[in-house]
Length: 85
Image (cartoon, rainbow, N blue to C red; front, side, top):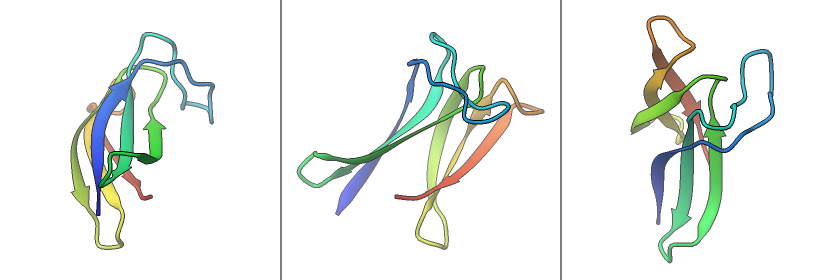
Protein backbone atom coordinates (compact mmCIF):
# COMPACT_ATOMS: atom_id res chain seq x y z
CA UNK A 1 0.00 0.00 0.00
CA UNK A 2 1.23 3.48 -0.74
CA UNK A 3 0.18 7.10 -0.70
CA UNK A 4 -0.23 9.97 -3.15
CA UNK A 5 0.79 13.45 -2.04
CA UNK A 6 -0.55 16.40 -4.00
CA UNK A 7 1.46 19.59 -3.94
CA UNK A 8 3.04 22.17 -6.17
CA UNK A 9 6.47 23.08 -7.46
CA UNK A 10 8.00 26.26 -8.81
CA UNK A 11 11.01 24.64 -10.48
CA UNK A 12 11.48 25.65 -14.12
CA UNK A 13 10.63 22.94 -16.65
CA UNK A 14 11.29 23.08 -20.36
CA UNK A 15 8.33 23.13 -22.72
CA UNK A 16 6.91 19.72 -23.59
CA UNK A 17 4.56 21.13 -26.21
CA UNK A 18 3.12 24.39 -27.42
CA UNK A 19 1.67 25.34 -24.05
CA UNK A 20 3.21 23.02 -21.45
CA UNK A 21 6.19 23.87 -19.27
CA UNK A 22 6.91 26.18 -16.39
CA UNK A 23 8.75 29.44 -15.97
CA UNK A 24 10.74 29.59 -12.71
CA UNK A 25 8.63 31.20 -10.01
CA UNK A 26 5.28 30.01 -11.40
CA UNK A 27 3.60 26.96 -9.90
CA UNK A 28 2.97 23.54 -11.44
CA UNK A 29 0.99 20.64 -10.03
CA UNK A 30 3.23 18.05 -8.38
CA UNK A 31 2.12 14.53 -7.46
CA UNK A 32 4.38 12.27 -5.40
CA UNK A 33 3.77 8.53 -5.02
CA UNK A 34 5.35 6.95 -1.93
CA UNK A 35 5.26 3.44 -0.52
CA UNK A 36 4.29 2.48 3.03
CA UNK A 37 7.91 3.00 4.19
CA UNK A 38 7.88 6.58 2.89
CA UNK A 39 10.18 5.95 -0.08
CA UNK A 40 9.44 7.79 -3.32
CA UNK A 41 8.30 5.40 -6.06
CA UNK A 42 7.33 8.00 -8.65
CA UNK A 43 6.51 11.63 -9.26
CA UNK A 44 4.61 13.65 -11.81
CA UNK A 45 4.74 17.39 -12.55
CA UNK A 46 2.23 19.00 -14.88
CA UNK A 47 1.30 22.49 -15.85
CA UNK A 48 1.14 25.22 -18.40
CA UNK A 49 3.42 28.27 -18.54
CA UNK A 50 1.32 30.18 -15.95
CA UNK A 51 0.30 29.13 -12.45
CA UNK A 52 -1.38 25.73 -11.99
CA UNK A 53 -2.60 24.40 -8.64
CA UNK A 54 -3.99 20.93 -7.86
CA UNK A 55 -6.83 20.82 -5.34
CA UNK A 56 -8.26 17.28 -5.19
CA UNK A 57 -7.23 13.74 -6.20
CA UNK A 58 -9.99 11.26 -7.08
CA UNK A 59 -9.55 7.63 -8.24
CA UNK A 60 -10.84 6.85 -11.71
CA UNK A 61 -12.45 3.59 -12.84
CA UNK A 62 -9.31 2.45 -14.67
CA UNK A 63 -7.05 2.32 -11.62
CA UNK A 64 -5.52 5.75 -12.17
CA UNK A 65 -6.30 9.12 -10.67
CA UNK A 66 -7.91 12.36 -11.72
CA UNK A 67 -6.51 15.63 -10.37
CA UNK A 68 -8.82 18.64 -10.19
CA UNK A 69 -7.31 22.08 -9.95
CA UNK A 70 -7.03 25.55 -11.38
CA UNK A 71 -4.84 27.13 -14.02
CA UNK A 72 -4.19 30.51 -15.58
CA UNK A 73 -4.38 28.85 -19.03
CA UNK A 74 -7.85 27.31 -19.39
CA UNK A 75 -11.17 29.07 -19.66
CA UNK A 76 -12.77 29.56 -17.13
CA UNK A 77 -9.66 28.53 -15.18
CA UNK A 78 -10.40 24.90 -14.36
CA UNK A 79 -7.98 22.06 -14.96
CA UNK A 80 -8.59 18.31 -14.95
CA UNK A 81 -5.66 15.91 -15.38
CA UNK A 82 -5.80 12.12 -15.63
CA UNK A 83 -2.68 10.23 -14.62
CA UNK A 84 -1.56 6.98 -13.18
CA UNK A 85 1.52 5.36 -11.70
